[in-house]
Each structure stands twice: as structure tokens, then as C-alpha cells.
Length: 316
Ligand code: FO1
Image 1 (cartoon, protein in one colour):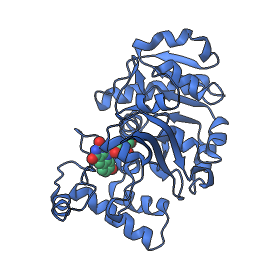
Image 2 (cartoon, rainbow, N blue to C red):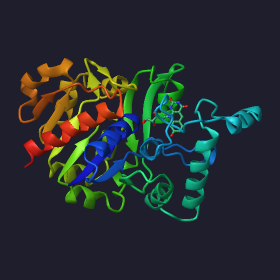
Image 3 (tube, protein in one colour):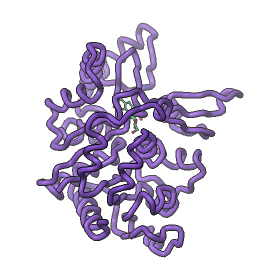
Image 4 (cartoon, rainbow, N blue to C red):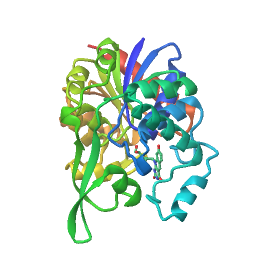
């Protein structure tokens, strides 16, 4: 079985850990969002790729959901002593090795997909991890701050401001010119079905779909998504702030309607949201309700198994 998954960070990584356990023989390709990529101190950080790689490779900090287990922050402390920032972005010493090596390889002329494959040699995530594009895409967020309109890098809004300042616009800058990374369109075309894990529909899945060619390729396939919204609130993170910015309500029904029946064939919602099955705006999408909190790897595996079974039922 070949499965292709579009992935953001923590929610996707935990779902993928469940998927790998549920279907150990499946050939899984993960297309990761790079719109969150960030270059503090000139180092190329790819948070979503690293979160997937560390989670599947056994190196993740389970408490945070991102970054390395057993982390220390000596280097960041030394930089702060020089007055150098950003001091609000928690780069740990172990994690820094990944960013230093990624940056070195990129400066030597390797592409982000080549570098990602090289880093995965160490972590052996058990999936093929591809960046959505080797071309730079950066998610920018427009906010009203200090009495004027400002355009911020996504991480500044998300981490420094905790997405607490309302966004009037969220834009994946560079996406329109970006080309899918080598293997991305091929993995979608070859997949038996495509899964959307419980990732942020705007800044994760939305940004991947903004790369020309990817949405068209996905639309041609059977697609099953897992709702990132349970009972009117994000399972994790601040997806509500992103949905509000694009005028979509924070509900499992509204997110499925936002993707639309053209894209989605099946949609898993939490049992709290089972009424989504009767929503007229979701006509044409097969809705199934089941517990969606990923409280353990076993719980994530049950959710992933349900997504795989639903894909089998709705397969075109
Ligand atoms: N998230 C935080 O909330 N605070 C941080 O200081 C932070 C640092 C960080 C460093 C490396 C990395 O790979 C991820 C990091 N994240 C941090 C997570 C990240 O900001 C986001 O959650 C994602 O970009 C959204 O998927």
C-alpha cells in the first residue's frame, strides 16, 4: 500500500507515528510544510520537517512536541550574553547541530530535499520525508501592532506573540513561484490515497497546497482528512487564530467545507462533532466520528487505522 501524507508539525508527526504502527508494511511518503522555515543567526531551521524527523526517529521532546529530548540551551544563553537575538526562539544545543549541518550543506549547493534525505540517514524515520519545495516559501502574517500595520515572519507571530495579535492576512510568500520538490508530484500520483493529518489547515496544509501543481495532483486522488478541530477548539496550537484570519469558523465542519468536496473524499471528526455528518455543506464527503485525541501512540494508531479504512471505503 502506498500512502502520501501532507504534513505540518506536531499533529502530523504524532499521527504519522500512529500510521506507521497501524500499517507497518505501507510505503509512506510525507510532504512537509516549509513555509514555517526560519533563519535565526543565519541558520536554516525547518521546524515541521524536523518535528516529523525527530518524532519518527525517536529523538523528539515529548513534552514540547518539537525540538530534542534532553535538550540544553547553553549556546542560546551565550548568544543572549552578547545581546544577540532572537532570544524568544528556543534553539537547543542538540537541535542546533541539525541546523548547522543543514545550513552548511545548503551553502555547499545541496537542495533542501537532498539535505533532508541526508539528515534522515541518521534518524531513519521509516517514511520518505520530502520538503514540499526546494524553493523558498515563507509564511508572512500581517498584524496591527504598536499602532501600525506590520508584516511578520510566521514564527514571530506564532512564538513571540503567541498568535494573540489578530492577523489580517496570512500569505505564503514565494509559493506562487515555487516548484514542487523532486518526487512530490510522483509520490502523490503513485499513492493509493492521500491523507491530511490533524495539521493546521491554513499555515500547514494550506501552504503545501499553495505550491503550484500540488493541489491539482491531490485533487485527482482519494483524500481522507483528520479534523484538527475538536468541539470548536484546536487540538493543539493556535489554528483558531489562523482560521479567523481567513474567515473560516473554528469547527470540524467549517474546516472540511473549507477544503471542500472537490478535494476531500472522507473526513474523520471526533465523536463530539458527530453532527458534522448531517451538515448540508459537507454533502459529497463521507464523515465518520470517533475519538480523535492522540493521547498515546496506540490512540494515534487507531485514528490512523480508521483513516486508512475510510480511504478504502471511499476510494475512487
Ligand atoms: N515553538 C515554540 O512555541 N517556541 C519555541 O521557542 C520554538 C522553537 C523551535 C525551535 C526549533 C523547532 O524545530 C521548532 C520550534 N518551535 C517552537 C515549534 C515551531 O515554532 C512551531 O510550532 C511550528 O513551526 C508550527 O508547526
